[in-house]
Structures are given as C-alpha cells and as structure tokens.
Length: 602
Image (cartoon, rainbow, N blue to C red; front, side, top):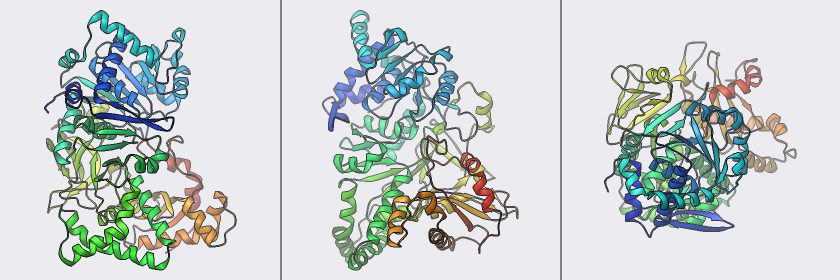
C-alpha cells in the first residue's frame, strides 16, 4: 500500500481489511470487537458530528482518555476534518490540563469518563477558547455544552444526509505537510512544550519502521502504553492499523499480565520497566524452587546464552548446542513463553534505556526484545534493532530516511522527514534544538558501534553528574545495573557537585516482604522496613556487588531507602515512566542531605 497522509493510511486499510477484526476492548468481562468496516463507519459518523459542531480545518481538539477504540476513532475523525488533535494524559491534574488546553488553543475536549469530564468542568470557565466537552461514556448536558459520544454520532448521521459528507473526499484534501497533532512533552523542568507533528512526520516513521521490522496482517497487539504518547500511537495505533493487525486494549496497566494470557499477542510494545518486572518475578520464583529445578533453570539459561549468539542474528543453533537448546526450550523456555501468551514473536522496547542483562535474559529464551530510540520530536523512531540482528546495549541502526551523526561533544544529532516542524507558539525553543544546518539536537550522548553501525546511547547530556573532584559520571549505566536486582523497584543515582556517588532506592516491596518473612522480620510497615538495619545491610550488599564492575569513582557509596514509589500522579514520573530527576531530587532534599552528612563507605 502507498499513502502520504494518515487519512490515506486509514482509507486504504479499511478498504483492504473491511471484514477483519480491528479493535477489541473488554466490556462487562467480555472482549467485544469492531471490524475495520465498523471502524470506517464510526469514524465517518463521528467526523461528521464534529463538523456539525463547527470544527474547522486547523481547529484544535483534545483527547483526554486512556486507550480504547473511541480514542482511535476520535483521532482519525479529527484528522479527516483537517483539524489538529491535542493529546492529554488522563493522569494530569486540572492545572496541568488547563495549561495545555490554553497553550494549544483547544476548542473541544473529548473525555473518557466522568472523572475526566469533571476535571474540564473545573477549569472551563477560566479558559477563553474552550467551547465544550464530548464525553465517551455518554454523559450529556447540552446546557453546559457537554455532548455524549452517541449524540455526536447521531448529529453526524444528520450532517451526512444534509451535506453529503464522506471520508473519501475528506482524505483527498489532506496534504503531507498539514499539521496532524500537537503532543506536549512531559516537561521535566518548567512548562511542557507542544511538539508539532505533520502527516509527513508520522507517515515517514510508519513506512520506515515497517521496513525495519516486519509487521503482518496476522499480528495481534496488546495496547497499554498511553496513546497520548507518540511511541504507542505511531507503532501500535498507526503502523498496526496500516498492516491490518488486530489491537486489544488492555483493561489497565495492572492487568497487562492477565490480558497477555487472554489475548495471546504476537507483538508487545512496551517500556523497559515491563521487561524488568517480568525478569525480576521469574528470578524470584526460581529462587524459591527446589534445588533440582533451580539447577535445570540455570543450565537452560547458560545454554540459551550460547545459543543467543545465533538467535540474535536470525539463525538457529545447530549440532549439539541445537539439541541442548531444544531440551532447554521444552523444560524451561516454553513455560516462560506461556506466561506472555504463548505466541509472542517479539517485544519492542522504547522510551528509556533497556538493561543489557534483561535483553540477554530474554534472548536466551528466544524472546527477542528489539530496542529502539527516539523522541517525541522525531515521531518518534530514529534507530531500532532488527530481528535479523539485534545487539544488546545498542538501540540499533538508523531507519530509512533518517540521518544520524555524533557532534564533537558526543551529542546525537538527526535529520529527516520524521523530525517535527517545531514547538507550537515557541520559536525560541524551536531554534535552540536545531543547529545551523538543520540537524535536530536530541540532548542524548552516544556513539556508533564500528562493526555494524549500531548506535549506543550512554546518557542524557543534561544528566551527567560532575563530582566535586571533577569526575564526570553517567548515571544511566549505574541505574540500569541496579535495576536488575529483584529487590529494587526504582532507583536514582545522584552526586552532582558532591564528593561521592549515592543512590535513592525504592525497594520492590512485594519481594522484600517475602524476604522479610524468611528472615523472621515481623514488622512489615514500609517505613520501618526501610529503617531496619538488617534490610539496609541487604541493600548495601546488593549495591556493593553490582558496583564491582564499575570504576572506583563511579561506584555508589551510600544508599537511602524510600518507603513509597515514584508515580505519575506525584509528578515524579513522566507518562512514559521516566524518572523526573529534578523533581525527585527536590522532593528528597532532606534525605539527600542526610546521605552526605557522613563519610562514604568503601
């Protein structure tokens, strides 16, 4: 298929895959589906309903919802009108939402439910440009300009009969350079910036990623990363739809493990935290197995590591190793595959660095994790690993149509049709991220693998810690290494302008509680556990072991245990689950000062 706009992508898919299942969501305990033909009709009706409300080309319409078929229908309908979608994370608080809606000049907001609608109602009187709300859960109050999703569909029916509106004609009016969406960056410091992405930006990424990783019409996706973020939107939402795939929308992030068992996905797109959690749970279970099972497990992992030399290059191990691998697969790896549905072809990872150890673990079981790299500003993919060659510790090689080079100071620069046209109403910020030759400055430090031209990202440019002794320390490798411990849920390495490196650690309390029982620790209160000398000794030994592979000046010398997780709601995580360093450091200022009040341990 050939398309140059998202509208054309949609039309070609619904015409080619009319009878095929497109979307599933669980309603009252049952998975209910829509075919591509059903989606075609609903998008046409909803687009016409928006036109009835007066939505014009260039108008901004926000979507404030978790992932569901109505999110997808809304997105396509907005595009067909030549309007611009503004994605809003439903986890945001009203003041944050107000900033985005005001800054983007949004005229209508499509909300998921009463909770989200109430957030808009609390700010709508203070927003000059906001005209009304469309509620996905069919809440309606015309006197307050709240329309239900069903009402808009009905208004669309009338608009179609009166005006002859149809998607085919609308698709022809869209141009590749037209603005498609504004996605606000998470804003680790200051207010978020609105990234302007065109049809060309997203389409170029869809076409390039489809060539880098084969996506087939038989693919089954499980969607749980926020569609408000460009990673899930481009890869699962647009690319999957363009190939005729079937998408199941997870009930929530907490039900992902159960949903994988139910829908048996072939491709799962996620951030590294999911893979780290699966890895930690597997190791925790194995540690409680009888000695003979543990011996079989680790034998299988060692065989898998040898086989990975071939598996990561799209080859099957042969000879005696091939025989051993088949036995290992039957005894151990098949059970791990069953835990993720039983027919998974590959994981796709992005949004944050993937631990090399986690990548090797899954590769040993012949479950590839294909790590990629990019930013919201690049639609998002710049590089990715391939099934025929994936390399641990790298983010792959550039996708088609994207140029990448390393600046003199080590910063990764890129150029291509995937790069944004700028930040909305913010020319100063836009100018800052482009050099004189039009290269986009990613803010990441990296280098190329000379052998295969695969890119390695070593850290964020602004995250480099400079100790009081003048040593430069990249925190990311330390955090990745610590994150492999089954006892560590979250961690942040600190030490900028300090005389040694330390770490803030949030324990994995589920696993820590089990350990506490085994060690006769009765008090399971989180605060008390974090202060318990025996528990502290456990974590200090874990950190000491991990740090042995690092240079002396890089090593974490002291740790502080925190009794609560960092969350999106607390403002300490971005919606893609990256830690907001400055926010955590500010919130933990007293803890950090206490860490540095004494001498470091060796």
